[in-house]
Amino acid sequence: MAEFAAHTVKSFDEDIAQLRAVITRMGGLCESQIAESVDALMSRNAEAAQIIIENDNRLDALEAEAEALAVRIIALRAPLADDLREIVSALKIAGVLERIGDYAKNIAKRSAVIAQSQPVGPAVIIPEMARLVVEIIRDTLDAFVDRDPVKALALLQRDQQVDEYYNSLFRALLTFMMENPHYITPSTHLLFVAKNLERIGDHATSVAEMVYYSVTGQRPAERPKNDFTSTVYSPE
Amino acid sequence: MNQNPAIGHNTVPKMTARDVNVFYGQKQAIKNVSIDVSAEHVTAFIGPSGCGKSTFLRCLNRMNDTVDGARVEGRIELDGQDVYASGMDVVQLRARVGMVFQKPNPFPKSIYENVAYGPRLHGLARSKTDMDEIVESALKRAGLWDEAKDRLNESGTAMSGGQQQRLCIARAIAVDPEVILMDEPCSALDPIATARIEELIDELRGRYAIVIVTHNMQQAARVSQKTAFFHLGTLVEYDDTSSIFTNPKATRTKDYITGRYG
Image (tube, rainbow over all chains, first blue to last red; front, side, top):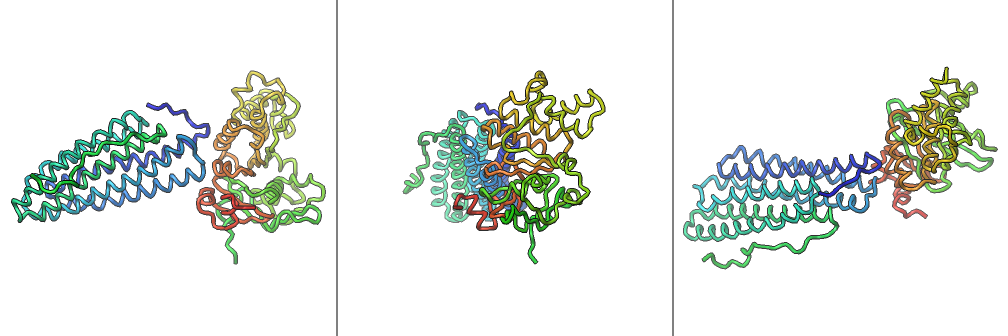
């Protein structure tokens, strides 16, 4: 874990701590939005889905707050070196977390339509995908709080598992649709849900890269991509 | 009627200035400046060389009285009292409104005597023990006690620049001021000494009304909560420091802080 000496002017440390606290709150909110949106989806709970949709406003507000704080720190403190990288990274991370929140909201939005049909078999894998991405986000936020580049680097591999789930879910849903044309509508929505989770995994990984850059000043080597669905022609 | 944001922004300002004009002989250095000085914030005066910020600062404790040919018009009040009133005791005024200068100027006396001089002059100590307490308290509040306590009888001039400046601040604090004026207090100091003074200013804020003149915009941005931009003798813009430096209203302000000026 990186050792950080305090600034001589303590209010500078307080400003940075305030910005980091907003990021941490955003991360926690993302985790719960994702977990609860998938819960609402699988349990066909329309009220829970609606709450998630409304909660997204809080994430948007937090992003605006993070942006205002970052701009203020840059203007008033003229941060340099690692301070500068911290502020710039925090700004970018806030934007990515807000995006992740939008994906969770989108999952919640689709759950009403999906609930109108009988459950789609292959969907059982979705809670497991969700659990994985929530874990990645949680661990990424830990790496952020601890300013730990080793932890951040280790996270870059975790997304591969999410991609593998997405690949198999993609094929399974295509097969299911071909065999059950009445289920094309809910299945298509579920494809989007799966895609949202896969995108969340990608975004969480890019947050880990930003944490790594913030602490070390370097970008990690090219991370492996395991999502091959764009080349899938037919699911056999 | 013009809405001047530099006045009426505090519930009770510590000092007020209305329609102040300052002349050096025929030359007008300050043109119609009105401003309220906050009791609880650090106010920074910024602006290019010759804009009048130091001249205006010196009006607040009548230091311009000592400048030949200087003439001050308008009304300046401390807690509602006119500082230029004929009955005003200027020595007392300068204890209540203390000043720290750009070049540290400790007396050629011991550290102890530097701090004790003012309180002795104003009769603030009834005994040696009293005076010891006043000196210790001022040095502690100026962040110099730990470095000075074992050498109080050594000369005030035998310290580093940063220490000397903190000694001058202790000297100003020792007479229990209400306002501390600082005219480019860190210009002669290195970055570490500067940071220590800035942290000190942060600690003193709230206890004293502080006004700092600085040509270093970054310092004004770090240290103050309110900023006044002076240009060619006029007060161009006054606002929260964060607003001045993220979204200034006047083009002249923006040009100055972004380095498009001149």
